[in-house]
Length: 437
Ligand code: GDP
Ligand code: MG
Image 1 (cartoon, rainbow, N blue to C red):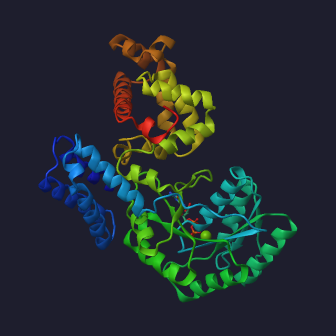
Image 2: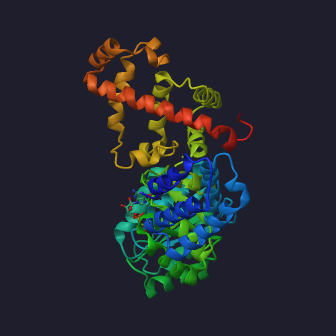
Image 3: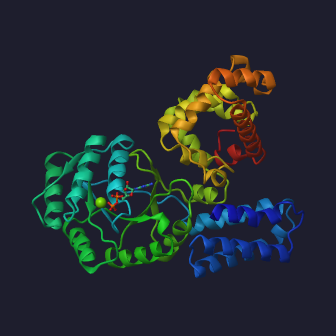
């Protein structure tokens, strides 16, 4: 993956006391190769790495105490800039605000429409309405109806109407009369860019004058994503991009190239099919994720949505003091189960993303872990170092597991604690969350 390749590119530099022109050049070359392999357009990758080289070759870097770290910081800053710098913002104010969703078939428009409605309703206090304007596939209308029902949002449906433009107009009228303040229009897509599709979406746009036109793109489509984005932007002049299917292992190439190519911000990222898995896009957090620095900020935010503040602070302080124990772990697991996709969440922990990409993480595999923790005594939970061979045997028996499984779990837990220690060394919390030191 991009992340692994970048990690190995930096490895060469990490141990070195000095940065020389030669090892900057070779690191930059590795970074460029990693980007191109991750489907970043060659021209973009070259321009990007040339910029990094210029910055790195500045005197300051060559004389830095830990050049590897500084190099990572330079790359992170440049990546952040490449993906748009600051958070883009999203405009849902209007009477009603109209949000038009466009993209190829299968890119995730309908799923995203549901997620956006859910996000605006449950997190932002809006009262949204969904509009099924994909008139070509009855199944698509049904899909949106089901999603709407699931999240408790009204769906405007006209099964007999074969004119997407008038459906959109009727929906806006209905929204006004029902005091809905956001209208999200889910449109039809084709498998490839197609004149009829473009005309239809453009007609809807002209008829309902949307505040936001969001272009939805499957992040797994690589280079094609850039071409598609360009075609849609030429025609629709969209206001933002939504990257979908960022579950698990991120290729990242699309995120890196799209902003550069069409100069439109990425506004949301979506991962997984659960209605809760929608995130506002933060370029810096994405850069950290791509570089394997994890996304502690998002992770803590997610945790805070579930934990109360006191719990979250306590947990952070324990992590910082290397006192994270099995009791905390068990509590985490319980909270995580409520938060959504396990693999995504684990991927946000620094250094974990690339390690778990091939792992099948599902809720069932966590049942065994819970059973093992349940078989520990309170002393063992709060003092993991206490757990010797005979205690492991007892725990295995209690949990109905092999001793090997307990050993493997203990080893994983140790690795996790080591990782957290590493995080502390880098003073991640201090750097990323000012005021929470
Ligand atoms: P549309 O044709 O653009 O409306 O796309 P859909 O919303 O119907 O999605 C196409 C397929 O991709 C469906 O099977 C969705 O469940 C799936 N899908 C959509 N978004 C995501 C995502 O973020 N992650 C994953 N893994 N699947 C997704
Ligand atoms: Mg659809």
